[in-house]
Length: 180
Image (tube, rainbow, N blue to C red; front, side):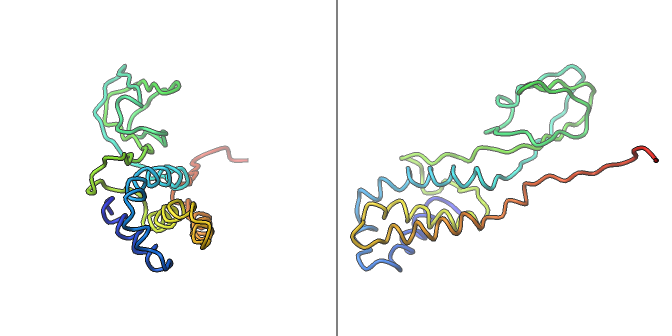
């Protein structure tokens, strides 16, 4: 999904639930606020459901990389396979030649005030649905007269609580060991 589609779906949701929807969806103040709100919600949801990405690189014994400089939008290392290595803080030193597969989490592409509508929103579909409710909640929270903000906020909290983060949970595989 891109930013333009996200805007359409969010405004459509607001229009479904509010009787004063045109006041919100055509108001330039809400339009200028949209990208900022979307970025806040994006970062909040990304902290709950991160996606790992893989980078493969040819390395030689003694090569050293700084993870946050070598990897695009590096957030957190998950693991490295294919070669032996040592790691201290964000510095990785490879101990042999070969192909290193680096699995890591990225920061999402940030949505700025002037971001193009073609900007890709890189979240799982379930998180995007939640994001739509979160943006609508934030846009409507200042309208206390109809309690729409509270309704959207409650639904956003429910959806956020139901996000499944198991795709990020690690597994343990033990081989060998001691025969007792």
